[in-house]
Length: 424
Length: 193
Image 1 (tube, helix red, strand yellow):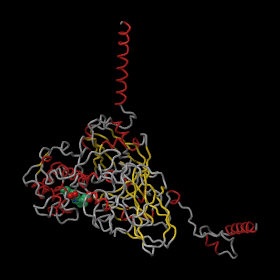
Image 2 (cartoon, rainbow over the protein chains, first blue to last red; image 1 turned 120 degrees about the vertical axis):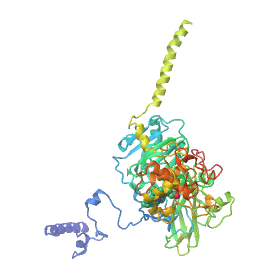
Image 3 (cartoon, each protein chain N blue to C red; image 1 turned 180 degrees about the horizontal axis):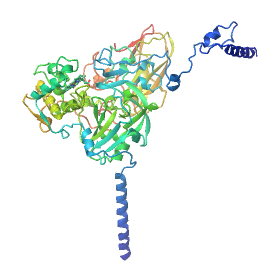
Image 4 (tube, chains in turn cyan, green; image 1 turned 135 degrees about the horizontal axis):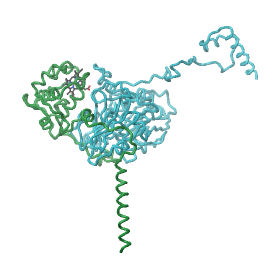
């Protein structure tokens, strides 16, 4: 009752002050100068940001949130390089929550560095030709008239390899990201064009300066490829292929051709510059470089972070697979002796990140934490030693996993709570 | 007998009609959105060169001409004289002739399984900053020059639509071939991880 009267008096006073000519915009400062104690708890703990045109038109994150992308790999080719090309840039997974990567923080990769085409969507068209009955050219407005799909999918770069030299989870695993993509199924468009039976592969080509192109099997085209124009509720970002890219769910990043301008249906494998870059001596290694294997990583606690002391922590991480949905994730808090089933924070979807967690009471002793997953087609994530054994090669410290590296990632926790790379 | 005949006379055309109707439906576009590009438009945009080179345009060139084009078109400024010493990737191997190709540098005109890929990449992506300005003759010449400095072809060999796809590349058949992709199947049969 008292407080009610007090606040009423405050309000009246403030009104009088306003009428007396005090200008707006001084915020909490003016209040702090009151000559009598304020209602306990009603003072502002922080400065107030006043509305502005920019704030209203396009929201910015807080100035206290400073998480940014970094060049990948550390010590590798810089982005931008001397020519102004961007090569590989990693997303800050250590700060991620949930499964969606903010579009501004989505990892970036190009075959061998690329400029960013500044495409006017009104001028851009997509043409489908080759082994079809009716070639088709679509403007972006026309593309959007077709029935659409909206799906969650990760994209991961083949360069997302972890080794003992890296420090943070951004360095070890930051070349994967997950977005909600909206677009038209490629199968819808290919049916519209009348796909010929002789079509076995298609070449997807972009509009950047090197016109990066990839060859993709037709089975994949008719299954789940998306000609995507939307990302996380808005048009694709330029760095993600504005105005249109192809999603090839579960295939390594390079196949997801950005700035898509042409799809050519062909009767055989066309080796483009992109595929040349992936050339390997062995068929087997090549096969392990197309579809992403089952993979998971703990993002908290992870390298360079520090646990303030013994007690409760929710271990949290991401799991994904190019083979389908993730089925199970297990976490070990004793260096891999005992494995415990982790819980999912969202429903696992095909070729999408899933957020997993495991509740843990740290007793303050030195240990290592690890995660591993299986997917719905029965593939499982393995330790590096297991993989070397399967290939019947001696396991060494710097063992290179053939194809894409989906091996288990350990984080070491020291007695002082500091977290470091368990492969170091 | 008479009535059966009558039945036949009536049903066969009906059946045929519905069959034709359904196939015609399957073949016609469902949405009718977009336009058909002209053959000329497709020819102009189709820069994908397959391993047999059927999309290659007419034209010709040899390493001798290519050396000149390499200097004139600014390749030398980024890739260095004869493909060594620039800021852009090297285009000539520094390794001896006896070193196996997989032990040599990853250089397109050396490691590519088909010479058509060299042609295709120069045509679509070089010279950086002025892409799409080379004539077919210039691309044939540059391809010949880069193959020559990597000791793949002799200096006087002329490359054209017929001879380019036939160039024997040093890698031969010693590279992994794409496997038959299967939906919802493990990456590699028998591989559990």
